[in-house]
Length: 500
Image (cartoon, rainbow, N blue to C red; front, side, top):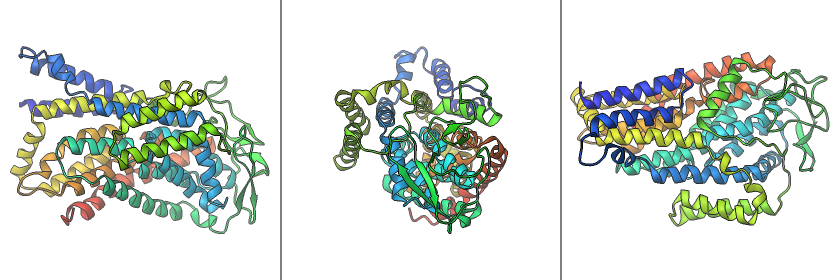
């Protein structure tokens, strides 16, 4: 058995173990790199550990730390909460526009560097509280939040986008970061339109209006419904929608709210119990993100610190896109400046850096670097070329990305599969690099709506007990429909015509 085949099998074992057992995929990948590297490089001129550490992605590490550090500061000082409030206000308070407002704000947060599961974990309690109080289907709201996060997730500043574009650059492939991001936005908008009409959006077209009447920073959105009455789910909300009461908080963890008070014990409090879906959400979230432990309520005003944070985010975008400055170093610089001039918001921000995500990506990329050093992509390419079916191989790898990502980490999949797709992009029968990379990225990310993926599990966990089973089943049907449909659709549009 060749070394290349053994390395591929080890990678598959890493994905399998991390999927069925609560073992961190990044840690597993580093162990795999250590074991494989020892047998491959021990006895060479250079020590085996120095060789393995040479595959560690230092620049990607800085990007992951920098953007999640800056995002943690923005969450701490209320900038994220202000953006949520601004999005709802900009929608005019119309019920039909609330899901789109959540789509927009999650997309904006992931586009500026928020980790997709972290953003979903922050926004899902808010969105699901709106859904509960105003009779919006929780599946509709949850999918809008997930789709929005995925749409922004491939911006040149985001985690998904940085991973994909870095791997493309490192392999000398033709790429188009803006096309990738644009394709993600377009397909997620189209999917959200389908979700809107499939999951009860029609009844919102003639619905009421949410009136933002309370401007206190200590409360979330105090809202009333004006105009036509809307159907209320009745779950844990006696008497239906209440006028002038708080509708939610990012700290409720999915507990129902009545009269501005949480009606269930919160996470960590006596009497709180987890369902299996909540347990899975907690476990999966630990592998991908770090969450703030404090909840300061919804913020409705711009103070000095929030204005400085928005200015810092604008500076990050301008520096990275306009002057080609390193995203990670720019993000850390902006974060440090904010820590100096506005230290209150920086308290605890380092602890909120998405360290599990950093370990995940750096572990996978380190192991993939070892695979590349042993010419696994070339070996795989020779075998694919011998079959003479590059288009079928491209479809297969898109399906692999979709199936594995529905249960495991999208970030890990992107870091592993794009290098293995390199052989399909070279040679006489080469497939268009931009088309395959975009198809693979979309196939691997859209399936995050599966309840077995982190984002989907977080939505299920934030549904009420009465809604949870139905939400789980609907997300499972939708998620696995995406697994079945998105790979062939993106393959037919982006790869087969050969126009990219």
